[in-house]
Length: 278
Ligand SMILES: Nc1ncnc2c1ncn2[C@@H]1O[C@H](COP(=O)(O)OP(=O)(O)O)[C@@H](O)[C@H]1O
Ligand SMILES: [Mg+2]
Image (cartoon, rainbow, N blue to C red; front, side, top):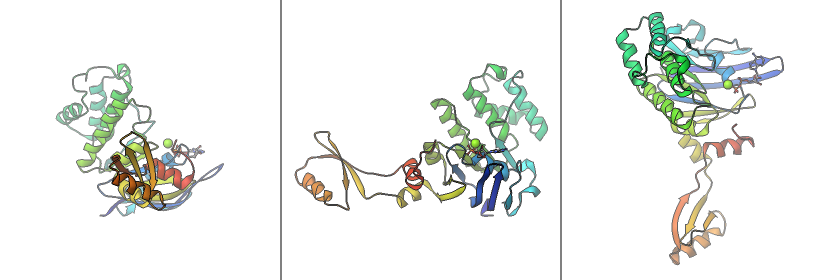
């Protein structure tokens, strides 16, 4: 099946008006799909609609070509702001609780504890853990039943850089073992480095979808960043007479480096919307 998730004309209206306006997109089986948008753009609303925690005003959601209401919860995992564990129980006790609910073996719990690098501290109560450790535990709880599809709602927001990288590496590993991932974020670097494809949500609409490489190519500017031997840096627009300046520098052997001025995911978002991704 090519698509794990398909949204057909999904709209959501709250009292203050439409948050989602007939959005359509598909998440392919096996990919990490990044859903990018500024705060308040409707990322969590979309995730909740797909996972049947919120009813859309109109439109339909298909998971593996079936209406999402027909899909067993065993097939999906969710990590969001309101995911929680028992603070007074230890790391292992928490995982064992989830394991029992899903009929998962003790060996599997130990394997998972090692994978999230919490095996050595497994007997510590959760309330004594750092934010990063707790997030690793929450991620483990969301995948203990080996879901085919995992939903992650801003999994690294408010983590320190080291914990952020640890979580991102775990997300990659989980995906490499065959889980399709739908990830919301407003972190453009995360989207760029982790996701096979990304969609931009803005003003209730999907304004662009593609792989980071495709998008960078599509919004590429015809400019080069040239650093000369005297360390001065110049932006050369190849569509203007500035290119003759570059030719002159080459002839005079004045150049230290030349780099293409590739747009970042954030540059593209700003170009499309006129606003920053915060
Ligand atoms: N239950 C709700 N009732 C009313 N408005 C809501 C509700 N949930 C979300 N909203 C509004 O919908 C918009 C999108 O919210 P949300 O999906 O949480 O955005 P994001 O996750 O992108 O930050 C916001 O303006 C928010 O205030
Ligand atoms: Mg949100």
